[in-house]
Amino acid sequence: MKQYSSTLNYKGRDTKAKYVFDKYKMLYKCNVLDVGADTQYLKDPIENHGGKYTGIGFGNNIDIPFDLDGNTLPFNENGFETVQCLDVLEHLNDFHCTFAELIRVSSDKIIISLPNCWSLFFKMLIDEKNHPTARLKWWGLPDENPIDRHRWFFSKSEFFNFLLNNQSKYNYTIEQFDVENEKSPLFGNGLINYTKSVLFKNLFRSNINELGLNNGTLWAVLSKNKPVNYR
Image (cartoon, rainbow, N blue to C red; front, side, top):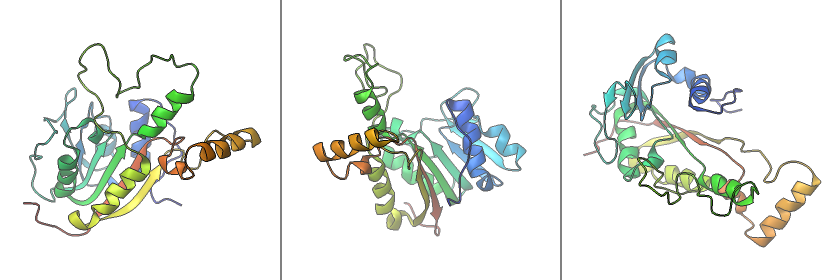
């Protein structure tokens, strides 16, 4: 059984905040930094739980308005026990810089969530309700220059390998890596859907499950091993 889990379901940002709090509440009775906090849905739950909350980034009434992209966070090393960054890194040009900053300012745990890009693409590909000219959300070519968009397209295995390959550099351990609906069959349950799955693998690639085409959000908890010099 996963150390961090929740039986709650979510559909929007407000219900997702309830899911996140329920899943990681044992990590919130401390000094918490929420990087890319948006409207700070988690501020009240965390503070009512006995934690101290600071939100930074863009959003309404955010504690510290700040451009996260490629900039050093205005905090000391190891300044927060728990640092979280939920569905934010994929929006930044300098993903790697901000990732390193999350590790730097944390003294203990780092919580990260990212979208499963291949899953979003796969759903659009097979859903007959999608018009042939429909744009893939966050990656398409809109008529007007968007205020925000995703800058990175990756699979669940790419994200896991990214975390794995950076462990020694930043002295952290992957404490938990989990994926929404990770045990869900590719096309669903039943013999017909199982047959579809086998045919799909034979037509395209045998290791297609690594893409997590039927999975949802990617979640990771990193545990910092010891302070390091990031300069």
